[in-house]
Amino acid sequence: MPIVSLTLISFVAWFLSTLSGGGSPFILIPVINLILGAAAVPPVITTGMLLGNLQRVLMLWRDINWKLTFWYLPGGITGSVLGAYTFTHIHLAWLQVLIGLFLLSNIFTFGFGKKERTFKVAEWYFLPAGFFKSFISGLIGSSGPILNPFYLNYGLVKEQLLATKSLHMASIHVVKIIAYAAFGAFTPEYLGYGLIIGLAAIPANLLGKQILGHMNPVHFRQLVLWSMAIGGGFMLWQERAFLSFW
Image (cartoon, rainbow, N blue to C red; front, side):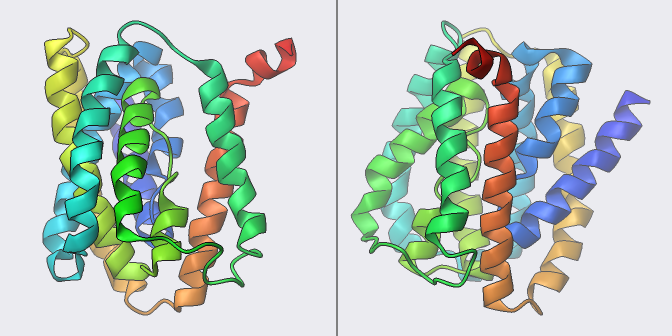
């Protein structure tokens, strides 16, 4: 039953994330936490996200922005290794709270999707942004769609955003898997559950792509922002004990 439930939930998570530019970990993390415990979340999510994002890369290859990828990868790879190493030593609740607040704030700064951009983004921004995103992802399992405001403000929408982001994510997930294994945070059981998540992404991504092709760019931007807001709220809910302490 856990395998069947995880497969169905993974399908829904990938389908929705295709239409909203990401956010599937926010649906999957509570399920993995319930089945395997908190320590399993980063390696299982990483395995599943690698497979699902690789399929998106193959599916949307022509829409990838290679200039951004050139700037993203050096910071992303470095941040992944450092984050995975740090994950084996500490957990920072306050960091997840800050990310949750940042994700929530974007729905207001973008005027609930009415604004196309809120600040100018140059290509080189993705070098430090990639490092920060990857470090946080390696440390707490998922940093959510924290870079979506950068992609949107650079001018990427729909297939371009999804394709470019998927390549970035797949690249750092490869590094994270190697790092988790090297630091002793990976097991065959985690690999198996990660494969279930990744395989469920195949039909979900294909179905999502068909709908995405007919979606209005404004509606896509609104879904991206609402996805960030919901994800931010989820991250704050996860750390409610920390918040109530203060």
